[in-house]
Image 1 (tube, one colour):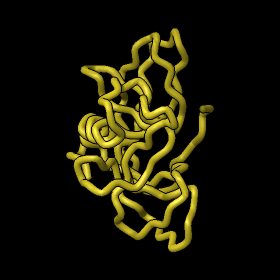
Image 2 (cartoon, one colour):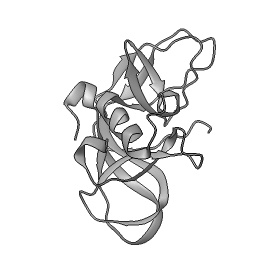
Image 3 (cartoon, rainbow, N blue to C red):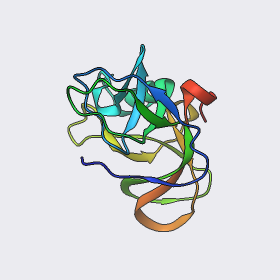
Image 4 (tube, helix red, strand yellow):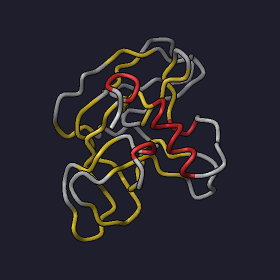
Length: 153
């Protein structure tokens, strides 16, 4: 995925997070905190199911990358911990307040870095829907909440 500014409105309450020099992060990636470094959702260890992967991401969710980090870079990046972001999603309808979590790749082995899906449980959520879509859509506005910085959804 290439850099894509997904922020649409609202306070981002950014933090500056360290990134390992071998890690690549794109603008718009969902990132989690791995000990002391930000990593994109796809680098999270596979937990064996989409629900378990979503729950682990939600538990360690730092926010959305507002800067990129290329392999070899050692500079920390700015990460939004709150705000409303527009993400790609599987075709679905959405009501205000619906829970949203990371979405798994087609192989079922990892989460996607810049895609979300509707979830049923708060423990799997990284945010809530901020714009109603009564007809099926493939993008959704999500009010994100960093678990690390704000306690989550």
